[in-house]
Amino acid sequence: MTDSAATAAPGLRRIVTPEGVALGVTLADRGSRAAAFLVDVLLIVAGVVGLVLAGWLLTAAISGWGLAAAMLGFFVLRNFYFSFFELRGRGVTPGKRLPCCAISISPSSSCAAAGSRPASGCSGSG
Image (tube, rainbow, N blue to C red; front, side, top):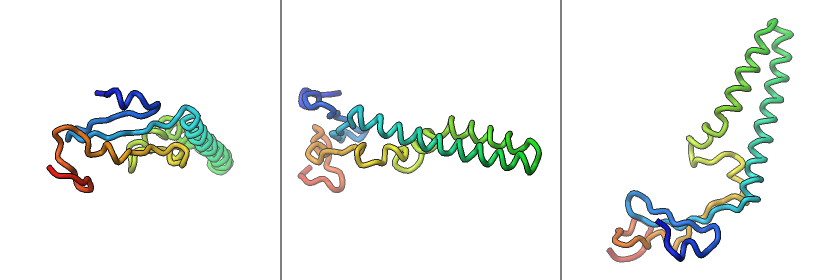
C-alpha cells in the first residue's frame, strides 16, 4: 500500500480510499500527539472535578443520590470521552483540534491514483 516516495519522507503516509483516490497524509509527531493527549486528559480531569463538586453539593441536598450521580457521570466521562468526539463531526477530540496537531493532505497526491477519475475539485483530464 505504501510506495518508496511515501516511506522516504518521515511522517508521510499514502492512503488509498475505496474510490481509488490516493491521499498523502502527514502525521503529527510524537510531541504533538502527547500535547493533544495531555489537553484531553486535562479536560477529563476538569470534568471529574466538576462532577465531584456537583456530587458533593447534591449529596448535601438529596442525601446520597448526588454521589451516585457523580459516580455515574465519572464513568460516562472516563469511558466515552474519546468515543464521543471520535464518532462525531470531524472525528477529532478537542486536543487534536490544536494547530500543532493538524493533519494536512498534500494536494499533489490527491489526484495521483493510477486509473482513478478526478474527483470534484481535482484538476486534470480523465
